[in-house]
Image 1 (tube, helix red, strand yellow):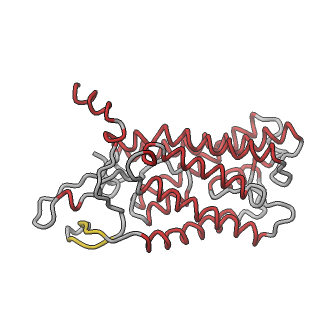
Image 2 (cartoon, helix red, strand yellow; image 1 turned 90 degrees about the horizontal axis):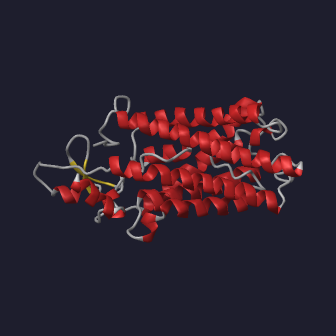
Image 3 (cartoon, helix red, strand yellow; image 1 turned 90 degrees about the vertical axis):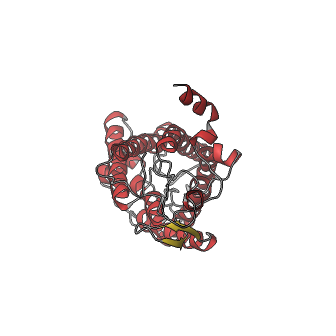
Length: 309
């Protein structure tokens, strides 16, 4: 059983598979998110984010949301099945059920460096795993840019879909928009992925997160490009050689992420858990819940099939 806290990421085959999933997901997401900007620009001869009329805004927003949602649905059941953290404690003290996490950790399906960094701070994954994810994410978005520039004739005119601020927006306004959108993105990840309640939200958390992406694109695409993802900005910028305002799409998401972590920290109650030294301590992260929310609870028929084998 893969334990994202106790397993060595560099020697775990599951961790390597998760890294490959992050690479493929980032590659696909880059192709769709950047490709939607390029394709809609080729049809309207407005290749960048500077002139987003309603039709292009709708196209780019839906493409980003559907791409992210479809990838999440493809990897989350697999991660839930192999990534469940059910610790057993035989020492004296509270029982195993009192100390276990009682849910499945958000160990894969990030496709965004700031989401991965947030999961490190929230103790969902270890730093070694995060470094592997960051390499996969940046390489995936860069490779998507290389594929687009060599396959789409108008890719160069659109600067490979690099996120840009609007003509009338200053760097400060674009930075503020990236901070605000990333704040709510990380908060949404925490609500939908890290502490999912039972029922509808748990089963459709990928779709709910996709709805947030659509809303954020509608609000921010015409201001800053609604990037919220440093790899999404840096990958095409490296290939296109376009560095204008790139710092906005690195600093903004990082600042928004840390602000969200502060809010999450104060709204999360402390629980008794066993630390790496074997001591029972009060801690907030990783988040522990009393009810069990696992792969078999989401897919009860699968449990019966496995039991019959």
